Image 1 (cartoon, rainbow, N blue to C red):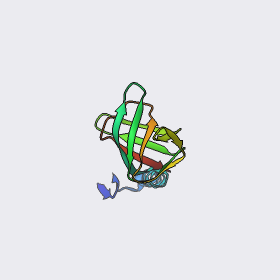
Image 2: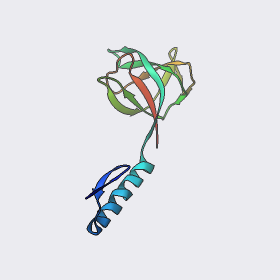
Image 3: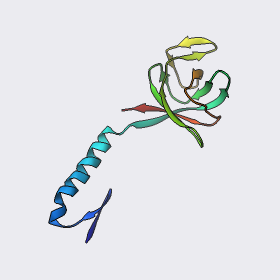
Length: 118
C-alpha cells in the first residue's frame, strides 16, 4: 500500500522506515540549502558585439552579487564583476537605475534578472 505525503509517495511498511527517514531527511536538507531567487530587474537591451546587457532595476544590486538571467531561451548564472551607469563604474545600483553589465552569455530583451541568495 502507498501512503501519500506532502512531497511524494512512499510505502507504508515497517521495512520501508529507513527509506522514509532518508526521503524526509533529503527534502529537509534540500529545503534549507535551497537558493532563494528575488527578481531585481529585466534586460532592456543587449549589445551583441561587446556582450553588454542594459538592465532596468526593480531592486538594488551590488558588485559581487550572484545573479541568474532567465528567459525563453536564456538561463545562466554569473557573479557581477562590474557595473556602469553612463560609462562610470559603480559598486551599487538602486531601484530605478538602468545599468550596463558585461554578461557571460547572450541575453534577450525582456529576460528576467534574479538575485540569488543562499
